[in-house]
Image (cartoon, rainbow, N blue to C red; front, side):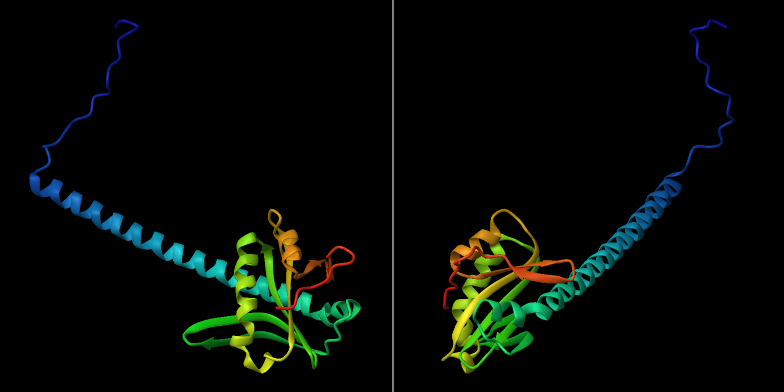
Length: 190
């Protein structure tokens, strides 16, 4: 035998598969693909549910962290709020709304949007909601309304954008939070 020669091992072959056998194998393979596809869809659904649950719980944690210091922080900035409401929800003319935290006193309210990661699109969306807040909550129509965003991390210049618009900027850190606006910051009344 030549050293460059390759020989396949000897395997006794049976009869060739019939059309019916090949067709059955295709059907079995198709069934397995369908089962695999179903499992992928179920797994994808479970992952999305876990992600939603994690995000919801994480968001509630950040809300609690911010709310715990909010009255003190706003009083230090001259807004004498005395109570807070979490997750105010409603519907006005078919439009749903939700505000994460509202800090209240007799003349003023501060509406706080809480995000784990603050993004520019969050600021734009919240800014539009602030302008509609007196329509959404007519009981506050005669009060001064201020806006605030609270977050753990900010992407891009989202935090600076919020300050430019006139919102309080609250950074959650460790087991507390702090207002990080520049000194001399004057909040906008919405």
